[in-house]
Structure formats: structure tokens, C-alpha cells
Image 1 (cartoon, rainbow over the protein chains, first blue to last red):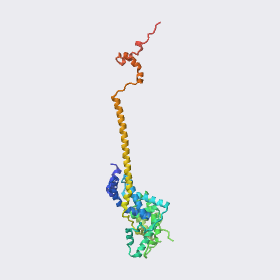
Image 2: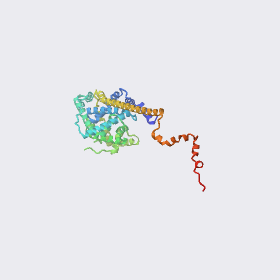
Image 3: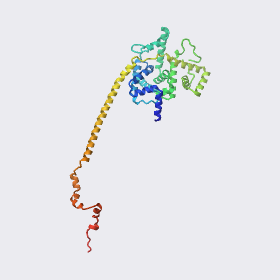
Length: 215
Length: 164
């Protein structure tokens, strides 16, 4: 067995998602559905954070799954399955964001997550605080954070989302985005600085003492 | 107006990497030393950390209940298309197989016929060998090729030279 073949087998043995994808590759009935069930939440959330619109996020997440299905016969396990999946998601999301820049879309407010209004989970997050004032504050804060995130360029946003919500380290982000680790470091540093500038008035709230030397 | 950052771009990149647990060794120790001595740098680190924590306030979007169903629905035409392509490929392979089989059997027939049924010489071949056919009666007396070659030697049948 060649070195590559050996390492692929070892990877497949370690990562259950690779085994699942190999079943999809072998046209195992039901494996694809299992894969969709397993990754839908993460992909929809990632897309939502990137495009800021629930319907578009679902559409893009579905497109990612269709691309996975289409390219299943070429799938070779070289790294973690999620890295491969998020590389596809990255390409698709960046294309969508770029084409959106070319033909601007009307962005819906955050509370209009779906055609029927906010989804139960979103409502739950909003309702976690006590009382309507608190809820309103949280809503406003979430909206400001969303705006700050949208203010980043698409690559910074992708790096932030992968790092913050997917818990990916710099090396994994670099692999997904096709960058060097050094470039990811610089991208995340600038992204965090931009977010800090955009959210400066929300960093110290409720009468907290601003540390000495802060803005 | 916001104050200028107490850190250079490189130092800030190191600080962010440090907060993310990505800075190790000498670089991490140098940064820790700077943070312990410089309150402005400490404040910057705190602000960056808090900014990062603010992202936790973003709602975690959930897929719709029919997400899997819709995805599989979108998959159906793709599968049908693949099936059609596979069928087309099979039909093409079958057609090519038939053509190959026909060509092969034609070749086998041709070779077999020629092997089983000896061919009559054609007019051209007869004309080519006319001299041999005409002299066949004489050639029959020749026992071997060496004798036949010897007949060509001028010493035996050459013209006699006159000694005049």
C-alpha cells in the first residue's frame, strides 16, 4: 500500500465522518441523508453568519450538500472531513458574497429570519434575558454585532466565523481558505481590530469600569 | 477621537494569536512580559477579548425543520440525471460491443474461408508464371536446384569459340 493510501486509511479509521462520506461515495442508500442531518446545523449557521439571511443561508447550505454529492466519486480522504466540507462552503459563500456585491440585494432585518418570522431557537435566544427591556437590549446588541460582522470584508468574516463558531485553529482555517497560517493570523488580527472599533461602545456596559489605558 | 493603539500591527497580530492560544514559546513569553508591564497593552488585550466574547450574543441560527427533506428533493433531479447518463453510457457500450463482435466475426469468416477453400490462381498470376508453365515438361527432369543452377554455367553449354 502506498504512503498516501495508508494515511488515508488511518484518517478514515480515526474520523467517523470520513467513513460516512466513503459510504456516500459508494452510493450507500441513506448515507447522504445521514450526512445532511449531521452537518446541516453547522453549515446553515456558518452561512447565516456570512450572508446574514436565513433563506439564502439555507439555499447555500443545500448547494454545499449537492456539491458534495456531485463530487463524491472524486472524494479522497486527505484531511478531516469537516475541513473538506468547509472548503466547499468557503468557495460557495465567497462566490455568493462577491456576486451579491455586483448586484446588491435588499437585506432584511435580523428578526425576519424566515418567511414566518423568527425561528423558535432564535426566539429562545432573544427571550433568555429577563423582561422586555432586557430583551430589547439583547436584540439591539445582536443587531449591532451582526452589522459589525457584515462590516468586515468577506475573507475576514469567513476567518472569524470559522475561528469563533467552528473552533478551527489557524492551520485548519488556512487549509479551508487556501491561505498560509501567517495570512490567517494577520486576517484575524485585522478582523478583530475592526470589530473592536465597530463595537467599542458595547464592550464596557452596565457601568463597568473601563481599564486604564483603554480608548 | 480614539487613541492610537499602543501596539504595532505585528504586536497586535501576536496578541490576537496569543488570545487564541496560537502563540507559543519565546514570542508568547515576550508578549506576556509586555502585558505585565504596559497597562495600555493590557487594556487593548482586554478590549479584544471582550469584543470576541460579544460574538456569543449572536443568535445561533437553526435550519428549518424540512431542511433535509428539501435538500433530498433538490438531489432527486441530480440522481435522475446520473441514472440517465449511466443508461446512455450502457447503451453506447452495448452498441460498441455489437459492432466489435460483428467486425470480429466477419474477420474470422474471411480467414476461415481462405484457409478452408484454396484459391484458384488468377489470370495475372498465370501470365506471370507463363514461361515456367510452358517449360514444365523440361523442368520435370531436373532433380534438384543445384543441378538446375549448374545448367547455367557457360562451361557446359556455352557457345564454342572458333580457333581460326
